[in-house]
Amino acid sequence: MSLAIAEFPHSAASPRADRRGTSIWTRHGLWPLLIVAIGAAPRLMFLTHAPPGLNQDEAANAWNAWCLLQTGQDQAGVRWPIFYTRGLGENRSTLFIYLMMPFQALGGLNVLTTRLPSAVYGILTLPLLYYVGARLFGRVTGLMAAALLAVSPWHIQQCRWGHEAAIVPFLVVAPLALMLWARLPLIHRAATVQPDDTLDTPRAKPASPPRCPPRSGVRRVKGQPAELARPRVVLSLLAGAVVGICCYGYPAVRLFLPAFLTVATLLNLRGWWHFARAPRGLAALGAFGVGVALTFGPLLWTHVTDAESINKRGDTNPLWHEDDPWARRLELFGKRYYGHFDTSFLFYEGDGYKIQTPPEMGQFDHYLFPLMLLGTIELIRRLWRWPAARLLAAWIVAYPAGDLIFAADGIHALRSLPGLCGLLLLAGLGAATGASWLRRPARTYALVAAVVSVVVINARFYLQFFGEFNRIGPVYHGFHADLVSACDWLRPRLDEVDAVFITTTNMNMPYIVTLVGLEYDPRAWLSGGRAISQSRNWDTYTQYGKVRFLYNTTADNALAPLQSNGRTDRTIVIVRPGESSLQGPAHVVYGPDGNEELLIFDEGL
Image 1 (cartoon, one colour):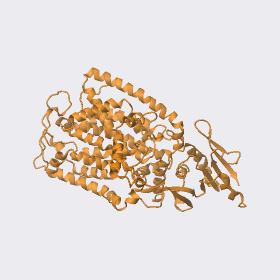
Image 2 (image 1 turned 180 degrees about the vertical axis):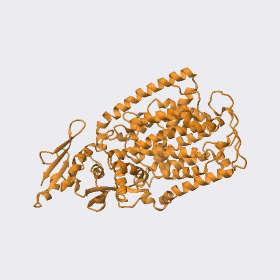
Image 3 (image 1 turned 120 degrees about the horizontal axis):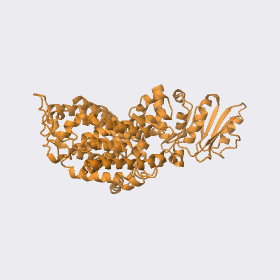
């Protein structure tokens, strides 16, 4: 408990905070490492079993990545798609499937390599959030925010499946960290920093910062040390490129990042203006703009010239109808925006989808409410004198942007993920503010009590998430745990059979799940032999190769042609109990309640 909590949040606008920026990783290096270790465990353990099986969305990502890795084409036959790839009938973002490919190159096509990228990038988000928090408000706030993220049920749950939304927190924090590292003027103010612009306890006056070298091309800003005022041009170029690349991820990021950076820039226009007046600052801004233009520009142009294709999912799922008047649209927009700050969504019920909301709670634990409230008060109090406060305020205000134009039964947890780290940083600021009111012995006791309380509260989540949560119907069937188990039995026998018939009852896009579960050959897939029917903008495959799916027919009717073709065919039939007159299954898949879920018949017909 030697953490020096007395070294309390200070704005990166202050000389003291900026001078310490170079020692962010050395002063308390063991604490971020400990937080990363604590956060890694629940994101990695039992990764293939909690949740069980494989959801159709993560299977679509895995299959397209595997097709690209093996053939250079996605499942639709498009070579190295950049802006979108066709999966399940919608046009999905491509970034996540490319990030998945190195894992598949090492471990093959399976559930583990499908989910491991989400876990790894989720773990990497922890030190990045610490860095961002430390640069904005001081090391203690950074540690608090990273620690809260490490044990966040919302983040842990998202890191444990292969959905492209799982890495949204990383895609938000990584470009912000790079922009801060490049010393772009997100939080630098042009005016003299006053003594009360920090929350530090009184200390000795720091030594004066060194002067700029002669003719350095850097405009010295009063109240800022020279080494901070000097921007990094190459890193600015990299930061701009990363901002654009991250927009190729989940659509919520594509909407959030431009909105967030625009609001943040408007709230610090004076800082950007003074930054641009220096030759090196102007060069850094130019480099940043070039990086954004080279990466985000083509994506933006595609949205203009090929809007129907790249916006396909959004166009089929809008928040309002075309004939709705503007008053109605504004009403829906306002209600949707407000809902993201409703305590029902944040702390009590979540978004209502069992597979993406922590069990029996909202998106956050209840103990975060007073911390966020305290952080909000401190944010408002310092808003106009604290550039870092304005940046965080822009983050909070803009976070619903990715979930404001798509329809859903309520607030959508995946499209709201851009705000996860921002809200936890707000809670970290509140925790650090409260700790600053206490003297050292009381701070130590409060820290111990907080750690014990968090462990006890989160133990309930861990017991449910790694236990009963995986046995409830919406999760067990939502992740096709029974079908994946059947594929494990079928995979070593597939080459020896002539035909396979699989039920579609209580399944969603079973074709894509079986492609991953059977570790199917992409070359065989692309060579043909597929049957597809389109309904409501979705691609429903009824057959590929020797595998057929029982849509609008029974197993007995599907088997009739084989029984009368005059030859013996080895046939595998996978059906629900009562769906076939066949007797004596070769294998039975039992559900978590002990009841029969799937019957597998191995017949010679």
